Length: 322
Figure 1 (cartoon, rainbow, N blue to C red):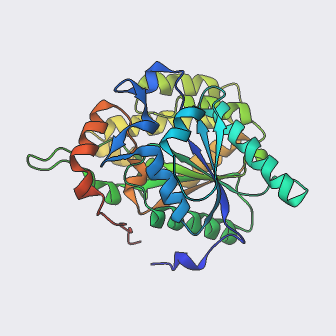
Figure 2: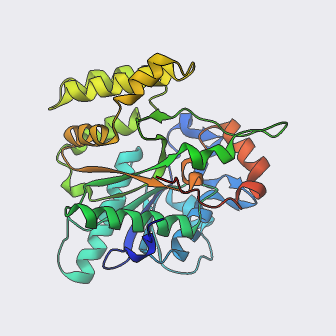
C-alpha cells in the first residue's frame, strides 16, 4: 500500500460542511434537516465537525445551513467554527461558504488565492472519522503532486470492496446501493471532495450535475443527457452517461452484455467528460473508507444506520489490492 501519509498540502486546508437547508421539505427526514438527526446518540453535524477538528489536514471549518440550529447543535464546541447562514439550495449554500472562507483568507493574508484547495463534505455521515478525512486529503494531495497540475475538483468515490461490509446478512439489515461500473472498479460517490471552485469555468453547470447526481434514477439520467447536449463536449458526455446507465441495468444479470459494456467504461474518460462539462480538470480519488459513502439518504437508511451503528463504527479501511 502506498504510504499516503507522506503526502500533504503545504498547510492544512479549510473545510466546508454542507449542513443542508430547512427550506426544502423533500430533503427532510423525520420532519427535520438531516444535519440535526441523531445517530449513535450524537447529532450528525456535530459528529462531522468533530472529525474535522481532529483531522491534522484541516484548518478552519465553515458550516453552512440554518444558522440558529447549527449554533445550538455545536454549542460548547472547542475550536473556532465559522457558521454561514443558508442562502438557498446546495450550490447556493456552498458558494456562500466559499465566499466566507475567501474573505477570511483575504483578511489574514491580504490577497486572494483561487488555487487554494478546499474540502467539501456532507453533514450526514455517521461513520466518518478523522482518519478517513486525513486519508482522503492526503490522497488528493498525492494526486495533485503526481499530475503536476492542480485539479479543479477531486471527487471521492468508494469501491465495492469497502462497501460490501455494510450489506445485510442473515437476519441483519444492511445498505446496498447501485454502483457505477467501470472496467477496473465498481464505485459509488463518496460525500467528500477537494476542490478549487474558482477554476471551474462552467460553474452554473455544477448545479445541474448535483441536482441530478443520483444516476440510478432514470428521470435524472434523461435530464442530465438532455442538459449535456447543449454543452461543449456534450455528445461524448451524453454517450458515456447512457452507457453507464445501460451497464447498471445489465449488471442485474451479470451476463455477456454487462461484461462487454463494462469493458469500455473507463474512469479517465468519465473524469475528462465531467471536466469538459464543468470547464476544469477532474480527478476521481478512491477512498478505502466506505463509510464516507453512507450518508443518511432516506428514512430507511436512517433506521438501519442507527440499528447497526455500534457495529459499523468499528469498521476500518479496506484497501483494494491492485
